[in-house]
Image 1: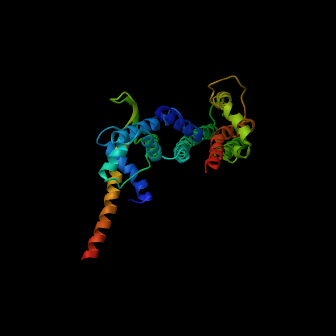
Image 2: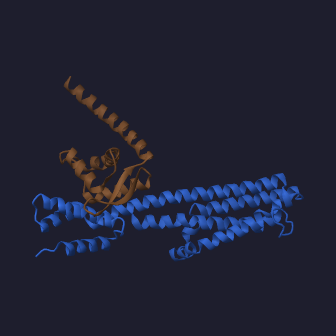
Image 3: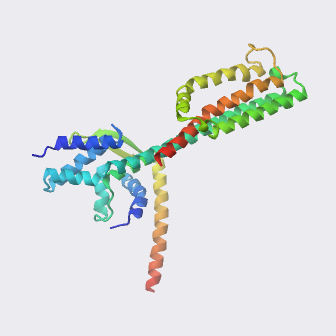
Amino acid sequence: MFDLEPAIAGWRRQMLAAGIQTPVPLEELEGHLREEIEHQAESGTDTPLAFALAVQHIGKANMLETEFVKVDGTNAMRTLKQYQTIMVACLGLVSLFWIACLLLKLGNLSEITAAQQMSGLAAVAVMILLAGIGLFGHGPASLSRRVRDLICISRGRLLVLLGVWFICYVAEPVGFLLILPKFDGGALWIMLPPAGILFGFIGGLEKAASKGTTVTTS
Amino acid sequence: MIRKELVAASAEPLILSLLAKGESYGYAIIQEVKARSDGKLQWTDGMLYPVLHRMEHRGLIKSRWAESETGRKRKYYSLKKDGKTAMAKHHEQWSLVHGVLAGLQKEQYV
């Protein structure tokens, strides 16, 4: 004697085993399956055949999963692009800020010499370069997946660190905070390139992770 | 039966056009497409859902869960503003293709 509910439960298990996520989209697919079974039964098909036809119409689990993975991949790429745009914009703003501070000799940088000014601008350029290398996935991509995962987990803490860095060394020159002594253009070499590495490292992880995902799903 | 590539390419404009008439759910969308094409345009039922999800993520449509008249939970889809714009674009492009084809066909009989 054919029992519909265990048959549907078996179909659900197959879908889950293929990687179809629950509740979405599995619940939606199950709803569709039940509607199709009802539709077949109404037109006179017996329940076992109605179930078999509905399963056939809905398609194979692995085929469906492949399609859903493509959707997830597209979404991940869109999020990555947005994230990267934000990171590039932040880098641009920080760089512009420093260039303006150095060129206009703002705040605590008012007494720097022309040589220190040039040295500071070079430090900004190195920061942009290092951050850019990381942001476009050339730095962290070479790390093992395990290390990347570890950094991804502690990304929040790294961002806090970057925030503290910003408050201490970016807000300082225009005199927002007076917790540090005055510094010259040369001191920027200690601050900006490491900030660039950290910035690129955090931002580039997403890109590196996406490279890993593409390899896995293709 | 219509070729697989054409079926795939026509999925988005058809879904958008159907949803322009009012909100609907997966099974009903498939049934309506089947009925309107006299069964010649057939999707693998399950393949509709990745398309719907992709369109939802792109902001063309939105969804909500609601109970059907039989008490079963259904996910209803409806058109968003961007979906209307996309639909207009699709109509324009498909009309253009249709126009070119029709023109060429006419010339063959002249």
